[in-house]
Image 1: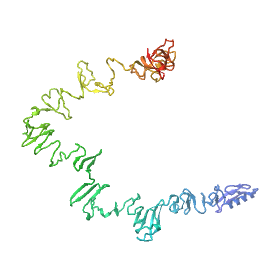
Image 2 (image 1 turned 45 degrees about the vertical axis):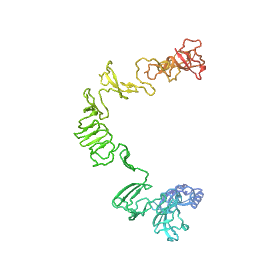
Image 3 (image 1 turned 60 degrees about the vertical axis):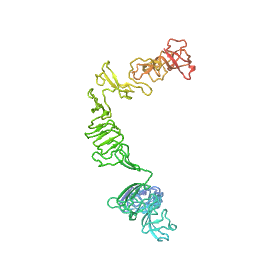
Length: 600
């Protein structure tokens, strides 16, 4: 009869039938009347004695079962879910799961020990991983030199990846490097001292970053030399007066106050170095004015305005005035006057002999070049005419007027009689030509046209840089041709190089010739006359005249030629039925197989 096996807590484990071996667990349970049970029982005792020693865990473990992991050399127990280390820490490269509060984990990569809190891991030590370098805030006891506080001094060293980058101290002293050297540290200040900051300013790129409530020095100068009151201000010590401030690596620009109230902006470079007033708009940066030791100039000649129509200077005083003058003149102007003088005085007088123009009691003395707008009793240079007209758009309306430039600077006239070195358009007389509807107005018999290099309708033909002219269709008689053959376009079954002999055939109209065929011509490189030129995709075939031609075999000058293999020509040798050309030279005089032939 089978018997039941219960665990220690009286929980049923399994039922073992008579005469059988039960394998529910890692131990084999023997049923009643099982023959040979001694071996099984003895092996069970051995497995218990060695705690199932193996590199792999027992596959049928029950809660509380012990297993010796021969690979890790660890004794482990089964908690119902996994085998856990019975003593010591779990060792792995990543954090293990299934731990209980207080269990240890040894990080095999960082070589650090952690304890499990129930929700995460807390580092026990070491604080810095040896493989990652020493990064720590470390307390230390150091000594100063005899000339300062000797110590001992308790400090904190801020170490990043093995290098001390800052020291925190409550006292100031000079480090005694013979007793306790710290690389790149000599003077230790109260508070935080950065590496390589022996004078209070770091000589390396180790810098304090962030917001500081105050600073003892700025650029090496003490903070009490910089005082901000309201707007930014630079006020120096009383003993130095008001020297202001300087800008530039060589103190190039200086702003200061002299005599209490005189504000001075000074260029200190010397050697006639300019002082520029520059503004930036949406497109670029530009100089508005340039101050030199010789005077003030605009950044670009004739580009900027001093004042405006609505914002004018009251009075301008100068010894000499050069330029166009627009406005009231008080006093005499002497010299050569070029430009327009516009007067509102109704008593303007001009002296034809002295060239003087009178404005009340003031005279303009000198040569006058230009026009005078206003009331004048005489105008000797204008031949008594005062009717100026900038337009000549309708014939007859500008008769007996003086032509002046219009708003574009052009002078318009119905007809110009004289010599001109340049002309925009040329007069074309089409009186005896039938009016073309495409012409500008469709009815005019005469027009003015512009010369063009391209084949543009209703334009005058002009030669290009090579002396050539371009036209869509040439109508007229040509007395000479540049090239030597007459050619016509045919559709070829493939692209053939010039000199290829062709015959009628192939997938299209012509193909490369072969022996015992009738050749119709030779592919032309530069045809003199091109027939059927609008055929799309065609190839020009020389039907008459002189062309280069591929030769096959030996050909002598004067030989009559017939079609040869592969698009060549060969000597007829008595077979004159299919002669299509005559050789103009021998193959023996050529380095290749191309010779000049006359296509008959």
